[in-house]
Image: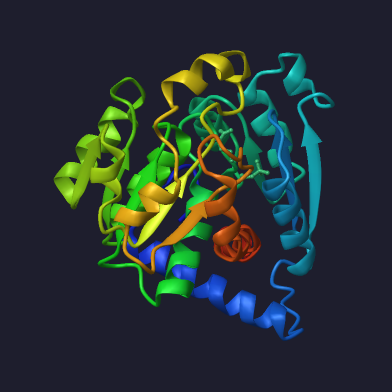
Amino acid sequence: MKHLLKLMDLSTNEINEILNLADQLKYEKKHGIEHHLLKGKTLGMIFLKSSTRTRVSFEVGMYDLGGTALFLSSNDIQLGRGEPVKDTARVLSGYLDGIMIRTFKQSDVETLAEYGNIPIINGLTDYCHPCQVLADLMTIREIKGSIKGNKFCYIGDGNNMANSLIVGGIKMGMSVSIGCPDSHQPDPEIMKWASENGDFKCTSDIYEAAKDADVLYTDVWASMGQESEAERRKKIFAGYQINDSVMAVAKPDAIVLHCLPAHREEEITAKVFEEHAKEIFEEAENRLHAQKAVLVKLLKD
Ligand code: CP
Ligand code: NVA
């Protein structure tokens, strides 16, 4: 594993290794056991979009591992004024040990990896969000005891989260169903791959999608960069909400996850959100542990 550009690049074995290391690092952190595995290493964190969890968890993660992180907002670096990604990659490769980037185009992440000679981590693009899904898988395993065999249901926009959840879910042996409008389905190539490699369904009927689910998941109706479409999207996604009637068709012990930030009474009711807040905030915490595992796998000598 040289980079984390998308989950499709990882084998089931590599995902399991990351999750095992994440569990160990979480245990050590909770018990005050120091793990300075990346002493003297520096991670650059390029952001072209906002972030709370990704920014803070990567920064704290590098600190916990004995290294340093630099926050590089696109407002402050020349990339934001048009310096090419391929030049930025070659310049930063001379200073840093790794780069985490949050941007719009998946091709920017791929270009960084092509032109740089240090590990690149995708901290979210319009196409996918692999770091979030590693934390999600860790959370499912922690709460349910195992990942394989669970029915995983995602309701809402077929966006970056849906794309990565399908890949992660299928690679880890879950049955994956997506409930979304026909007009906003996940990436067609990912859906084709999922159908050929596991138990996958995409339907506009959210009750069919959620039936007997062990894990329910949702995300915002308008992602970063789609702010101008927010009102139009509210109409399109009005029926695609996790609420009591959806919970009623899932398994009685179903858990609910959300990558956050959440918009209450849009993709999820405030009631369901608060009833499952323990799971959702454990999931948010697990970003830290899962990403530290990724950093160790990619940056450790
Ligand atoms: N879930 C997630 O990536 O959160 P941020 O946008 O706050 O980083
Ligand atoms: N789909 C959301 C995820 C945020 C973590 C977005 O891209 O804004």
